[in-house]
Length: 131
Image (tube, rainbow, N blue to C red; front, side):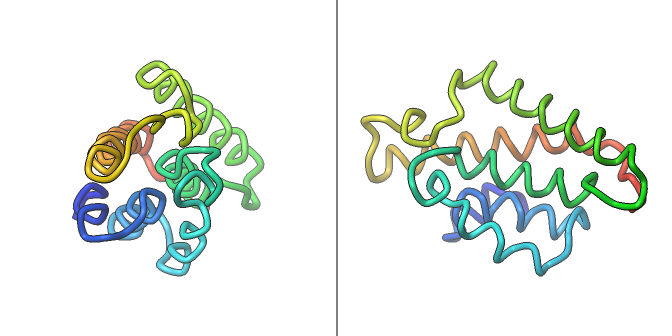
């Protein structure tokens, strides 16, 4: 399933992205609980959870290992992704991105961002780096 399907089924924004990453073999199943605390802007309205979930998957794929160059790959992909997100939405703060939205309108707006993050992850994950 895609992240937007998980979001529709009740997973949070960050969990939805990570759940898709697990399904696609980008990270281990035990990473999913980590994503829970990143929901709703780090549970405080700060960083968008869909961004956080995408960064978790990028880190799981390309993060620190014995190969030093993986760290730079992770940082480069993380930076590229945030740049793409900001180009489209201007902000990364959940509170700002969802300002004035409630209920179904907010959920629909968040769904759009979850979908965007999922598609950006597709672009960023061309070749899985062996860890």
